Length: 315
Image (tube, rainbow, N blue to C red):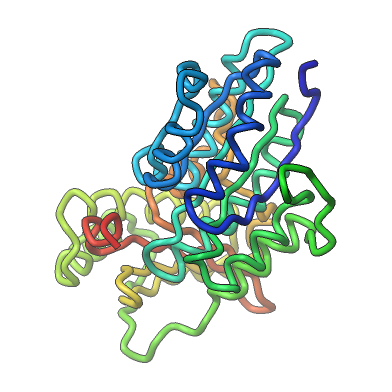
């Protein structure tokens, strides 16, 4: 029987052996139903599942989570595209493990992704089991894992999660958690309507802070999109502040308007041919994290780009 809509579940496991023993029967059942099965897990967990499945794993896509679309927004797009390519009547069984390396902002982005799945994939013929290794992860991440999923996988069965939180509330709480005041040694880049001058100043500052030239160009592109949105949709004044924290280059663009009303803005790509919605979608995919906040006097979009991508991957 094909699955009519999303079942979003969390599996909190203890090490690769338990992961493989619990997931292998579920994967075999999916194969027997005719589901497409895609797994993105830690390498040791993926290897253990491959061994457990044996010859049954021939039709399963098994990936190291560090290598399969290791950016939250890109991974969401990959899952959406996989669903879109399913034959009529077929379902997807996906096992996915977030990447909890990097800065606090990057971890918040993965947490945001987990909650966003409930909205972005709500009508997909999909059982999505998200993976959390209790033997390694701190309680704060495990607590969010429970809160982001309507159901839990326990002992091979499924039970409701009593701590599930409305996705919009969860995303707004994560955005608010990152809204700490800028440090005193921040660098303010004046914006007086000249985006060319703004881009040059931002590029120079990023290079001074140790960002690579190619990554600095991506930062300029992403920030320019946000500034353009603030000019068109926000209220003056538009202000830009930059600083370095927790290994990230942070660029905050603020204006006097009410802010972006949709907490999930930028997660899903617009329909082909659409003339709107591309700015934040592009920005979210360039940056390692993006946060939206709104206050009484100003609204802000805060962009985070890891200064050393090699360290982010190896962490």
